[in-house]
Length: 357
Ligand SMILES: Cc1ncc(COP(=O)(O)O)c(C=O)c1O
Image (cartoon, rainbow, N blue to C red; front, side, top):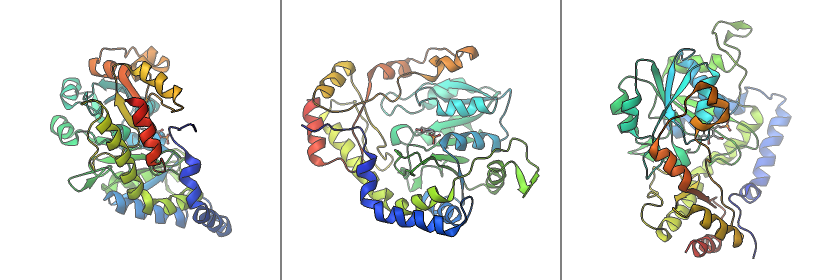
């Protein structure tokens, strides 16, 4: 029986080959490769899609987080609250600006930030909260807002393009929303890419400057902390082909997750409503290792997102952040990621369900 992969980008992109080649040719023929018409058009369309006033294309999702922190003026001596189960991306960005992460525990069902734990961690030194919509599931933003008052919220939407609640899409809840267009993402480029969305004109202006050496105008660097981090014309052109297809892909991902959820015991996965774009089909299982072995035996690929809590990462040990977050630790031992991508067939989904039974 043929193997079932976790994801298959060849199957994802093959039906778009003609349109993608035309878009690439358009860029090649234009003679303009950095910050041109393709990026401007994509920024306009993606801001409209997210429901924000602005979108600023940047080099990747980690840069998006770092530049968002810089735009808020966060730096050495500051603390930023975030979760420890989201793959180190937010923590890397926090450390890159010279601040320190303060880790917050998670909700045991959705595996996103727990507002009650956040309330216990906020001190005067905490200057922002990064809320990761992990696996495509919108976090409890109302709960976070209620406990953090005026503290700015940065949404990490790298896994949540298009997730929406009460008519508001991921990225439009907080001061800033950060996206990755890494090829496996729900909206993925054919290389690295990222964006920050915001409806705050001052933050938008800061980001436009920070992504390009801190320039106010060409060669005049007036803003400290500038970087070179730009979405390029080629990736923007690719993303323009794909954006109109995103909602359809998200719907298919949701249907796959809903089928897994039906087949699993209660509490293994949350419901997949519109506030979940099912980037990763992550379930909790007490016998996780045995399930992974059984699925591997049936030719079904699984993974763990993510196997190491940020506070336990060797790169952060020197900061002495090791701590007890009971729900985070419990989830780490139980999570398993099942195959989920829009082109997965019904027959393949049923094979996964059978192997899970
Ligand atoms: C939740 C989350 N945040 C941030 C990132 C960073 O994005 P990038 O790989 O584009 O830097 C990723 C993806 O890799 C991610 O999954």
